[in-house]
Amino acid sequence: AHYEAKPVVSPMLLSEEVERQVEEMQSRMHDPTETLTDLLKAIASPDEELTDELGYAVRRKNACGALQTLTTNEKNRVRICWTAGVLPALTSLLADGLGEEPHPNTRIRSEYEAAQVRSISTLINLATPVKNRIAVFHSPGLVRAVAKTVETKTGQARRGCAAILALLAKSPENRLLLAQVPGILEVARRVLQPRPPRIEARPSKAKQKKRYPWQDEDE
Image 1 (cartoon, rainbow, N blue to C red):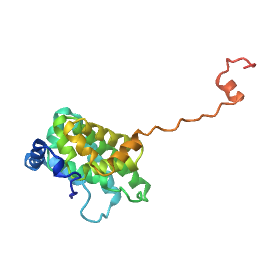
Image 2: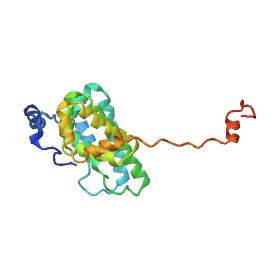
Image 3: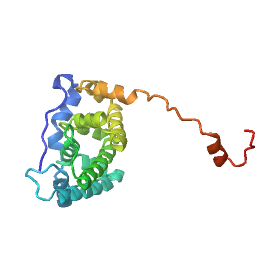
Image 4: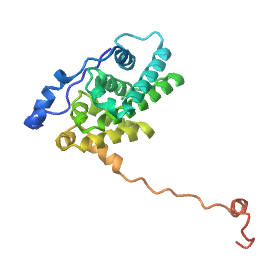
């Protein structure tokens, strides 16, 4: 299983130091352990057509949960982030289903949504250490998938991906580059746009009496 995507920014926008770090990214990557390799195979998009979609969805969700647990430990975050295949596998999960109709099977759809939330939590953990943010930002397709999730999803998935973008923007070397990502400013505008105030109906006297039995009849 694998996932490939083009970078989202032009090398012309990189400082010499950042460009050097980006060029060295692949050489700095560790080989995954056997256990991590099995997790990544379960998380990444399949190369072949599935014969057991539900079984795959459940294994994928569980693998995302295991990776999330591993990255909850702060000591693991840098090494896992700089392990070959981790970021591409998480990117492939986020990219699956974007722009497509939801899966018609409710159970499979629920399993995918759970896997998505767990993968986003993992990315938040990985983007927290400052030294990881270049790797996260420059992992091909990741920022675009995160931004698309903010744009098209709701609830935990949207809030989590917004948190990932906020963490990446904390690093000065990412800010200008982040602004160059296609559609990112529109995504930010939508997130920051205030919601219209909620108008709640005034409760009837009957409901007031039922809710507040100590009130006088004249009220």
